[in-house]
Image (cartoon, rainbow, N blue to C red):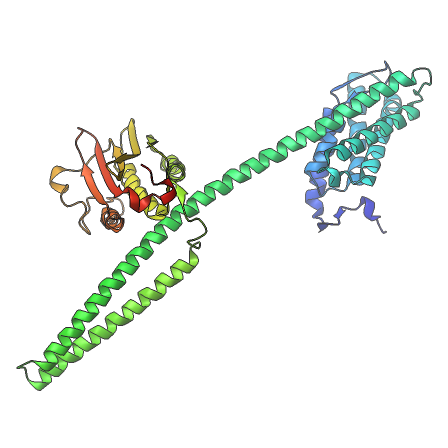
Amino acid sequence: MVIPRLFWPYNEFYGVIDLKSKYKEMLIVGLFTAFMGQVNFYPFGTDFRITIGVVVFTFLLLYFHSLPIVSTSVFTGISVLAVRIGIDMFTGTAVLEAALSRHMPALMYYVTYGLIIEGTSFRRLFEKPIYFIVALTTADIMSNFFELVIRNQLSNKFFDAIFSTIMMAAVVRSCLVFALFWIIRYYSLFITKEEHQRRYKDLLLLTAKLKSEVFFIKKSMQDIEGAMAKSYSIYNAIRDNSPMSREELKKITDDCLTLSIDIHEIKKDYNRIAISMEKLMPASDVHKTMKMSEIFETIEDIFTRYIEVINKDIRLSFILEKDFRTSEYYIIMSILNNIVQNSIEACFRSDSYIKVSCSFREGMVVFTVADNGKGIDEKERDLIFEPGYTTKFNPETGQVSTGLGLTHIKILSDHLKGSAFFNNDTEGITGFRLEIPADVIICEEDGDV
């Protein structure tokens, strides 16, 4: 048997649809419409009723955009008929034959309504509000009149009153469908936009970390280049001036030469890594500058979510004296990210807080990060910026921190011609202060401090 495509779960945009999921959606439409159809009123004092069910039916046809309209209309009409007959028989209002005769026109209403909106391709009219509302209103009016004809309740004497009532109901129901779906649609777009912003902020922070790592790779390349030059000069000095035996001299010079070659190969590998990492990152001219307020907002959003994940009770606040644009936002984000991360790890009390601020003083941009965590012992304060120095130890895993976080902060601050300081002037408060020349990080168009 060949089933006409009109009744087959098929959509020209989606092809043949998964039958199981579509029948499930059709069942939802049918039953939900049938039960919501019990919210109604009888405008003419007869069995003819105006319900909110058609609003639900049309909305769900928009929501389940791949459902075939006509077959869903037939199924919905049968569902409405079954529910109404069941209610009449349960309440003893009518026997089966009488209930069937009373509610059969409702089935015809939904079949007619489905045929008309299918003919108008109403889903494609959604971006044109006037056409959309006119199409639904017309379908509603025509289906209601068809139902009244079947019920033999269309009177010429009261035609004006009947038409105005049906017209008003049709317009209201069509507008309700349109408004309801637009609200849901824009809410969905709002949620999607928020998710995209969250992902962008995560990507921005990841890029900042990668940028700082590339900076350190390039710095290491310079150090390697210097080491290579020194080893090669040692090789030349030993080769030209040495009282050692020929065999000893040859061995040492060979080792020096091999060392120079190895260092040069390491430098080339570092260079390849740096180039590859820079290719993976967004082009530097995509966002040439960024507002300081946006940097604070990004860091705050990321660490607020992080604090929720690790289940700590920490108040995080950011204070900006004056907004400005900077082209060094990757480095600034990397510096602040390291300090805030350290502060979060140091916080353990129920009233913990971290305050991040940016102010201006004598041509310098001053960043401060303060927390009321466990602090740093006085004997350790002179060593915290030294490479490899750490007090962080995980007793569960036995893992010791690398001790490079604050060292990175110091090097990155030096790169910006600034300075990093430990600040413990207030009892119980641990703070870090960064002072960076305003003309280094503030763009020229925002250069007035």
